[in-house]
Each structure stands twice: as C-alpha cells, then as structure tokens.
Image (tube, rainbow over all chains, first blue to last red; front, side, top):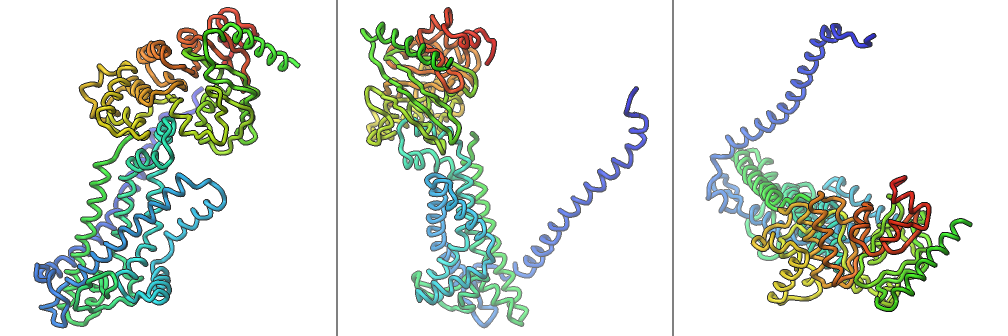
Length: 292
Length: 275
C-alpha cells in the first residue's frame, strides 16, 4: 500500500508553484526598492550638480559667491586626513590583529579584548567625536588640526580593520604555518614570510573599506569643531582644515539654490572618491586572491 | 597485570634489538618513559622506543592510537596544540629535546617533517624549496640555486619541474606537491625526516613514487613514518612499532612483526581483525 497519493499531489501542485512565484517577486521587489531609491538619489544629485562640476570647481577655494566657490580646501583636507588615518589605523590595526591571532594565548583576558573590539565597531561615531574632543583637541591641545581629526578617525575605523585583518589571518590554513615551523622558522619569520603574504589581500580590502568609511564620516568631525568655512590649505598636520562632508554640510545649510547645486557637485566628488577606493579594494582582492 | 607483562615484553624485545644492533648502528632518538596528555586525556602512555640511524621506522596502529601524536612530539610540533603536557624524556642524539636550553627552532633544523596533506606555500616551486635555507640565513643566490636543484633531485621531482621552477607550486598535482614538500624538507639538510601519513592523500601511483623515494632517502637520512596502511609499513620499513590506545604494544623488525607477531593484539590488527 502506498502512503503517498500521487494524483492528489499533482492536483495540489498549482498553488505551491503560485506561492513560489509570489515570494520570488516579493523579494525581487524588495531588492528593486533599494535600487530605485538609490537611482533617484543619484539622478537628482547628478542633474543638479553636474553643471557645476568642472576643473574650476575642483581648483577653487570656497567663497561666499557661489559662482566662484570651489571644493579645493575640502578635497585637499580629505587627502590630508587619509594620509594621517591610513598609516596610523593600518599599523595599529594589523599589529593588534597579529598579536591576537598569532601570539596571544586564548584565555579570558584575550576573549574580553575580543568582545570589546567587536563592541567598539558598533559604537556610534559621534561618541568617538566626543572622545577625540576630550583627548586630542583639549587634553593634548592639538586643536582642530589634521592630526587631532586623524587620530579620532583612526580610533573610529580601528575596530573594523582589526576584525577584517583577524579574519584574513585566521583564514590562512594552519598547515602552512606548520610547514614553516617544521623547518625551524621562528614565529616572526612565519608571520612575515607565510601568514602575512597570504593574508594581505583580505587585510588591504578591509583597510580600504575602513578608510572609505572614514572619508564619509561627518558626525565626529562636527563634534571636534572643524571649521565649516576655510579659505586656506593646511601646510602641516598641526594646521586647521576641513573635509568634503563638512563642506557639503555647509553648502546644504545655505538658503541659495546655487549652493544646493554646489553641494550636489561636492557629493559627486565624494562618491567618485569612494567608488575609486572600493574598486581598488575589489581589484586587490581579485588580483591576489589565492585558493588553498 | 596483563598490561605490565606486555610492557616488560616490549622492553625485552627492545633489549634484544639493542644487543643486535648496537654494534653497527647509532641511536638517533631514544624515547624514555614518555607520557603525554591533552588536557585530561592521556594520549601517550610510558612510551619507550629507540630509533636507529639510516633506517625506516614505521609506526602503525588504528586511528586515535597516538601514532601521529608521537611523531609530532619528536619535533615538538605537538606543542602547537594548547593544553599539551608531557613527562619523561626524548633524547635526540643524546640530548633531551624537552630541555629548556634546547630551542625548538634548533631541533627542527635537524628534524624535517612531511605532513599528511601536501602543504606547499602559495609561492613558486623555487621559493618553496629555498624557503628553509633562506630563513636560516642563506642569501647567496648561487648556493640557493644549488640547494634547490639538489633537493628537487633528491625528491625525484627535478625532471618534472626544472622548466617551471618559477611557476606557482599550486599548479602541480597532489603527488608532485607532496614530493615538492619532501624536497622542501631536504633543503634544510636534516638528519631525520618525520613523515606523518605522507601518502594518505595521494593516488596509488604517487604513493608508489613516494615509497620508492623513502627507500632512496634512508641511505642518507633516518626516517620515521606514520602510516595506517600496513602493506606500506611492510614494504618500506626496517622496524615497525605498533601503537594501541597510546601504548607501544610491539616494536621490532618489520619482517618479524608481520610474520610472527608476539602479541595477540598485534596479530589481530595486522590480520585486519580490527582497526
């Protein structure tokens, strides 16, 4: 005796297929919604800003007159900020990751550190702004300099870099470490010649994504008190400066329509920088990706 | 009671060995009352084994009997596992490897290891072989070239790779990768080669090549090989140790252990009654 009635199964096939298609369309619509909103945003920004986007816009200092205003100070400031954040956050982050993955014994203390790093990655960026204001701007009296902002931003992205680097290091097969140790290599030689070369694509990808987050962050810099209007360029890390998001924030706050369009042009510049950095991350990942 | 008798018998067998062999062969490794624990788990129990120069010593036994643990203790790789404790002594060329003054790095330059799964570095074939000499401070390109050629020839893979030394080692087949790993191990000019089931991931033809290679290598090196393939142990080894539940049940000439084992459990294992 058969327990499954096949004619009945076939008869009830139709509603199952309908439900299948229904859910497929539902999820497709969900995806489409996000894309559509993004598309509208991009369309608005590009139609509004593209007219203002030219070499003069990139090369001019900000001005009260919209037709003369440019984004040079902010662009240069962003590059200065990256020049401070990249070396500090990468060296500290990768160093911490190497210590935690390769050297530290697995005990309560290290798992406590681990949990806190993950928690730090979720702390709102404005809290880092307050930290930077208290420690770097006031206590160390660095003022609203490139260095103070750079250190604050480094702290902000540090957890992301640590977690990404740890994962990259952990994904290096233990067999490779054993092979190296088995030939009498020290831990440091193994890290330098075997672990890091294999982990570098993951570390760099994580690092670049973290830096592109630092480029876009505004809140901590507002808390630090970065100037919204600055008509000169920084000459060293101790000088005042401003960055792209601050400049955009400034322009969007003005009543004149021309400044709104300038803000849109600034957003395009920011987006292009982000896209370039993300593409570099993808390129690195594809070029050096190794399968084990 | 029974276990004590077994241990005595093993020692007697070993004692006979010594008398016979002492005249012409040197002991490379002398294991004396070795015990090892993974946390609470007593993995090796009172191991006594002597390993002789220019011989192939096979270690056989069912899964989980401690054979891999033992071979990894010989170059202290086992210490990578957290929570490992040992007692007793292993003397390598007369010096206790657990001595504080004996650095693992120093030990491992004399004792090479070939692993279960081929594990070449994601580098070129040349760089794989030159890795060991380089970390030991050899920078001279000419010497490195010589070492690479000699080692690849020693591992019987030179003819297959000589035209593509600078290509990635991952392009080689599994069997070639394993011979490359043997070459990489030869490059540090070790005294002893430890092989932890070196053919378990290889096809029969590659296995045969590695086995032939082992026969060739024993002229120059002392080889300890862990295998769960009893035919392999019978084919290539001079002496065989049978491990069971962390103990050495029997250790004697390979011919003898496979023809007239003195312990019932050895006999059961080699005739395929368990394991």
